Image (cartoon, rainbow, N blue to C red; front, side):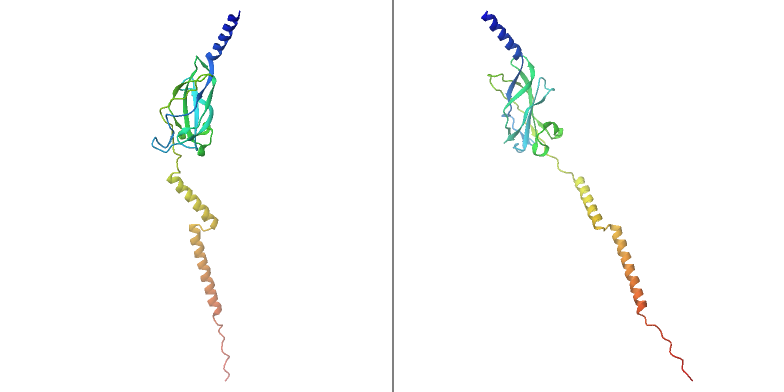
Length: 211
């Protein structure tokens, strides 16, 4: 009777792990993350990494939480894969995405696709305690794209807009300034001519000479 009960329990356990879940170690010891190019500086605390996992290479979704880097390596940890995985031991495809968290924040889903670097995709056996915690053996480093600087024409347009705002506030538009100057000169000339006319002495006729 005990043997039957043990067999039932064992069968139940195998049924559970046959569509189980598990953990893997989220770190990149063989593929340091770089900025700009493979020869660029190593990623540090402002660069974030997100683990992606799926049953197939084209079905990867974020798992775990984003982690920061230190000298090229993501400061990761045990990462749980929450979806059901057939077979035992369970295995999943894993990739890491990396981006500039100082610019784009810590939410992977809100980062522009052109600003994300990726490792290669590898198959990882998950840890079902008390088994060993395995890490993805990535060999292709994630290269985080440089944040684009404002283009020259954009800076020129911005400069023109700021100049126009300054001119409007000062009230000295190019055409108006010249027109005001001419009007001011005309007024000065008019005042001068009136002043000259007013300064002329009045002609007083001499009295008639009596005989």
